[in-house]
Length: 401
Image (cartoon, rainbow, N blue to C red; front, top):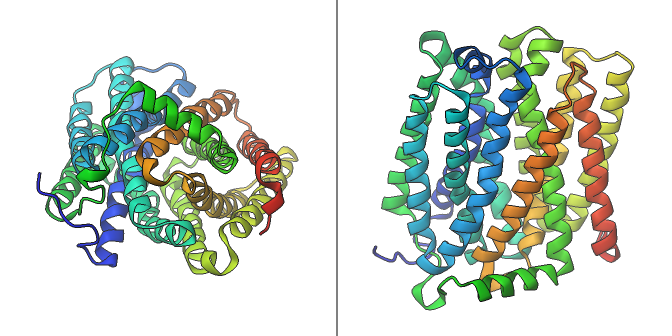
């Protein structure tokens, strides 16, 4: 493979390409959400809560895959591993159109998550190769603007496809889009990790990097915080079909409401990209975390007292997602800050932890669904409080610095 000089692309094209690659993960989850009830009927799933596994196992595989692709990207280069990961992701999405049982679907979803991990961990390493500190956080936030357009559009895309075609067509459409992004990468993506900086994977080095990361308090506490935020996202995504079917009895409103909440996430990214260099990464993220806890607590009390309506859900959940985005983008940047030349392996170790712990916590919340919408903000509030406790322990001296 020909090595392309780093920064061969203009910044707008680089941000657009990175965003489209990162969007593969969100597309693989969000586009099929409106189809979950139909998938359940088609595959004869008796317990609706079991359909949450279609989302949760993707996240779980995503965590495992980051260990593989992060390590290999430090050895074989970022571009090569992205092409392999997204290429296999497209093939596995196409294969989903052929499944006839829930176990088969879950197996493919696990493998899709593994391959989609390349879009997360390797692109983070690409950005870390070129940027650091507040500038890195700004680049990540800028790319998230396009990345977050996917949750706005993907459920509507899924619903539109369901109007004329059965649910397997959604997975075929994702396969086509992934193949197009793969072609764009092959033609235009620069290699940001030159051969002279690469290292072969070995167990001793993996243990060494793991020990290095574990001895960096900043890396540890913000990796834990990212896991907590991810668990709230997973619970939200998993429960949305059931919330609109069981509570509001308006499944047709899932995509529009999902889009409005996603716009809150996009607004959070724009706000972060605008202010992070002026106010500082910690001040932005820690203030946002306090807001997140307050909003989710208010939402929890509001729902427990039986006051929840579709309008209140949209407003409070939209504010929750905005605050979560301000936290997550900066927490990711802070967790990567001390990693330096081992960014790929460090990002993979952090990614494994955040995805596995996040999927387990989020799945635990989702499996307690009994029809009470208060479960969602309750789980989010507890996870936010846990994230804040971690930061107080490991980074309290610079809490708003």
